[in-house]
Length: 614
Image 1 (cartoon, rainbow, N blue to C red):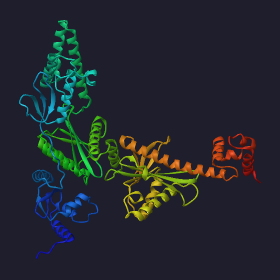
Image 2: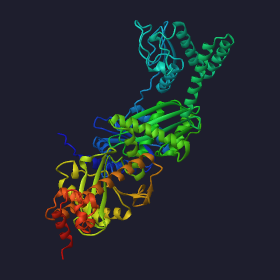
Image 3: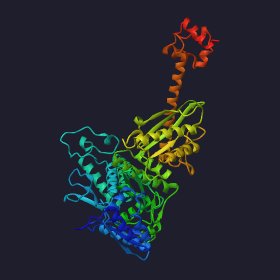
Image 4: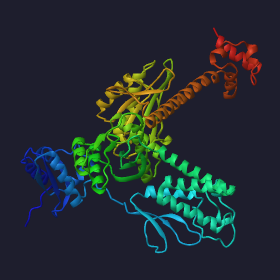
């Protein structure tokens, strides 16, 4: 009878085998109990890389731990160089499609521009060529380009964008497109069948020859119509020429100063990630793609695997590939792409100018697609992702706590705690604190006391639920500078709690200027999305803390007045409205007090006697 091996024994056996591997480049293949390959990787030194899987799991993310739990054995192939290992890794991944490698699903098919047959032809995008009576232009690999072209052709040549069949049995009122001169309204009988078909023929010429040829032909037709005194026809052609020119200018708006390149960016949450690609040809944006994947363990490695996967599916490799952040083994990747393309391919990470703006646009696209898949908004997803990169966090901070201290010259010391979840205020989780440990003004000691109380609650409640104080935040932002950050970190070390802590620094106008951490100040002005989010957090926590402080202070003042015989809450409120402070009330004469609405002579004398008693 076979003895079942425990997980501990299995990992011990695999580690022993891994420690016998050579310190040479190669590819390793992780296998499950059926012998199936579940992960393929490359290594500069096989022994070091493979043995790291079977030691401590402390630095491994969930996906890697799951993979290791399913590894029953592994095989390896020694290579002469790390580059040879890269090429082999790519080939084997494409061949075996292992479960735990990042695999891009290629949903690219062929796309066509379809022109239906009949007296009222339509131009539309199509994924198939299953209508034998229709005319097709294509195939194109870019659905983005086909959709954009069809929309612009419909607008320029005033062709309907709706699904109606013409001629309509009953004439209808034209839609908005007619009034903004983007449709000829055949549904309302605003154009004859002959003129409509002429528009379709011009649109077909445009599709066949491009904007330059179409403009040349229309220019000649316009001049001929003007000579024949057909001024309405000449005016219509003139308007069409202007529309095509505007279309050409619009195309230049989303353009690059590098004629041919691909731009990549990765956005991620704590659940998933999205790779976006913008493809430029002849300086114009011609295609846009995105791929949703599980949250990667290592972003640099993820970018490396995504590039291998993407260009294994695509034939065209441009001379320049731009990234938001540098992928792993960038020189090896560049060499692999260069050999695949048959010419030099540069991998760059733009730092400024128009190229940096293109990368940011690509990141916004990735964040938008990711947010859509998670049911969120792209702006908040982009801001959290940008903040994570700025602060060096392993993942976007979806649950952020922020703290601020408020007092008046050391009296009525309070603190406010706010929570932002997925980039939005979570007001149900807001908390208020009274400073109890000391009297006087000491913002560092106040902040330390508040965070100590907060995390003592966590240590007491963490096993009971995952809400309120029982939940650890992904990030703590203090409305204060480095001294407050240091004081809080000391408390957290003492309690054994690990959460990233940073301070929000204001300028002389009390506006957010930077974030401060152990390495000094981090400027956030160049990171627009992150800057807006941090500014909103700082304003909200300040508002919440000062509101609580004012309420307590007002309550204390009101208590001083209501302790006087004959003065209730209404009279106390009236006195404060009239004199603005208790000090002013105490210095008022009986006549001045009687002048306040609701204060009679008896009450006025009692108030005066209270403040002037010997």
